[in-house]
Length: 147
Image (spheres, rainbow, N blue to C red):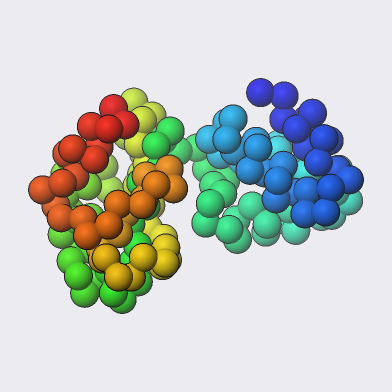
């Protein structure tokens, strides 16, 4: 991916740094340091400010991670509804802990704040696709959709 072109293509767009970061992350899976430095140069902000944008939003990652990002809501409604059991099932099925990626680069596990689906907790998302009322027994079949 030519991240230099992607970033420069968004230079004159209001909110362009966000759009550029989305586009680069879609191609690379995360925002490497050199991408953040280039965005700082193009958007005429400090590298610290560009990093602040990249690290503030939960949809961006500044660390390499698995292709399929599984997030589980850690808000109170999901917690009360059994999120801990779903986390345990995810970790068991994938053989990794929250915050890690599988060795084959297929999956990453992350916590997130509320995804706005409190009527059907616990909730996980895979690459942004929500799964509602998730039970631990469903985890193998959800993961199979992305294997």
